[in-house]
Image (cartoon, rainbow, N blue to C red):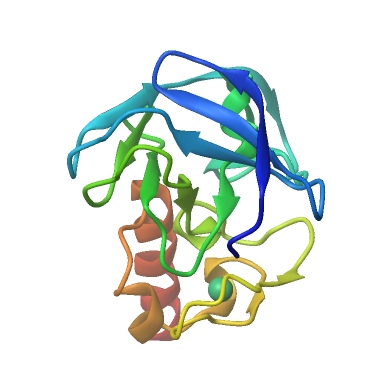
Length: 163
Ligand SMILES: [Zn+2]
């Protein structure tokens, strides 16, 4: 986790960095943020009807390509520091974030069924392992996280169907 990185691009409040060891890019705070503070507003540069590894889910069959594009470097963590509010279209801090800290989000907080599942190696004690979207997680796990209005609606629909 603690490897050397170089800065690829610097923006007003964030920077895109690259691991010298793995080449993986990540987004970092270049200033401190308070819990609930807006890190960046965002918009849809493009809308797609099916997900890719770079889209964020906004609704059934609505997957957006993020603008500003540096937001594509926000990696998944099972213990995320930030959240994409796809109703207000704001990327917000879930906790106090120190300058230099990585900005991460919990993919299933926005993604119902992801294009590709992957094995998480975030290293947190509560790491969920395989991440493939909210549809594959239990309510018990999901309620530990802040979820988009879309995911909350999907969970309510699922509950109704089962009842
Ligand atoms: Zn994890």
